[in-house]
Image (tube, rainbow, N blue to C red; front, side, top):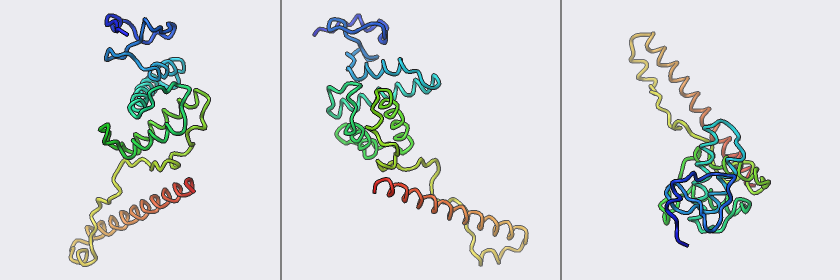
Length: 202
């Protein structure tokens, strides 16, 4: 099929217009748009949930997901064909990357954002069961905005005894106790996260 390059200057996403073989849709890059990308865009435009930014982020994320599924070999997938194996394949490359395609692993936060988009997709096509309710089912951890390593200054007992100013010594003692308590709470939270994942997977 010979592509009519003049069509790339038209509006691409007219939902009231049906595609024909003689009039293909085009992506922003001017290439023929795949069926899944086109149908996901239609789905987003027909279901404007959330703020404008949320809608735009969702549409962009789903377009990226469609591209990844195509690269993974699901060339004939349509919007209503989403299955558990597709979700599993996506999670695998998000968590571990894919050297063949040059994809690096992404953070837990990014993975969770993408899972939210996939859940939205599954819900809109009436197939919410293809994706588990819990991210822990896929081994996706909790978002980590700060490092678990404590940056607190820990002062030993001998060092404290050498400090002549009692006010400075008391201040350092209190700081050491506060940060020690924070470290214990962080370890306790990590242990609870591990138990939660194990409970889901069992």
